[in-house]
Length: 145
Image (cartoon, rainbow, N blue to C red; front, side):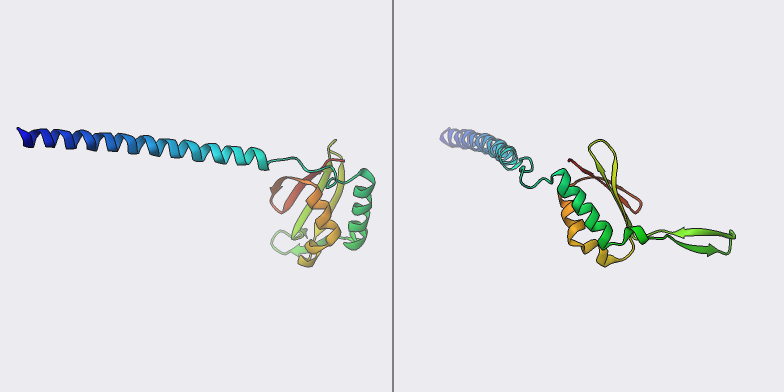
């Protein structure tokens, strides 16, 4: 009788430990989710007004990018396709299109060389813009000015 009492007592204690362990695990998960959510709310903030470009600065940067990348002189390369017998345009490595908040195209920059992507004025313009999407070899951005 004493042995059965000890066995029942031990199983009760084990069940209590298991229940407390599950409760502790659930509380830990809940606390971790709360910390992640709270830190996201604290760290998520809008771009400071100082980091945004004014309309004049944006247009100045766009003019500098056009000058640096020589976009006015850009001519697409055409290759003769012998199978079809027609000329086809050789697409650039990447095309960057930047629109304003009214969906007006501000800049279309075909990137033909890798070093053109390292242009400091283009980088500044892209950093101030919001990335929208990328399709094929074209990337679309929106600049809130």
